[in-house]
Image (cartoon, rainbow, N blue to C red; front, side):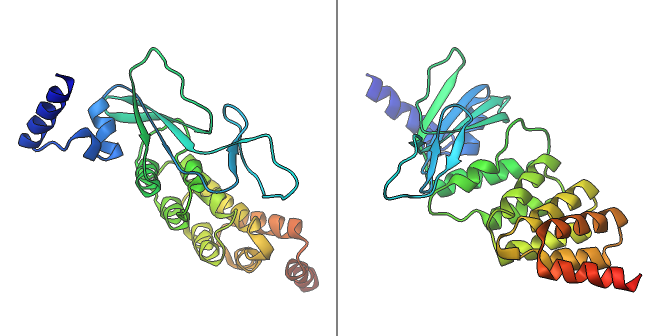
Length: 252
């Protein structure tokens, strides 16, 4: 009888033009749930592990030592009200516990499907408790940088979400990120976000952000943004930054 009811449910859904649950996107599943918690997991990239609730690390590989840290998957818990996600929690490893609220566990989903949903969540206006950007950086096989660039440049996204995208871009996206971080620092209307882009440029590996910081220090219209660029150039101790300071001092 349970199997017969499942067949009938699918048939009715198809007749009404509603895709069966298994064929629905994560966004559709949240809307269908309406109120409760939606859970799913996806594959984590190598080195991503968890050391308990809220403690997530990315470890380097060693032939003689292994961290006391449980490897993936990445686990997402989304609290849904009226079909809209209002809170997001990210875990790595571990196990789900049963709770008193209505929970729909979707099991393991594809990495691309998960990242598409997280990006959509990040781009949506409004207040969301939790960070949809961070779990995107933990995913296996798919580079998140293009998505992070879109989030960082979208004015409608929340300031906190855009800051998170800028921060993670500064952790390793290379030359492509440098160009776009400079663009945000040069032209974004939110000065605090501009300052955050300047900071992210200072965090790029191998001094890749130094030329952009020098341009900002030389040419930006906002004195406070120029000051921020000079500050991070001073922290870098890069020879190019030292040359700029010598030039400015000599000019005086």
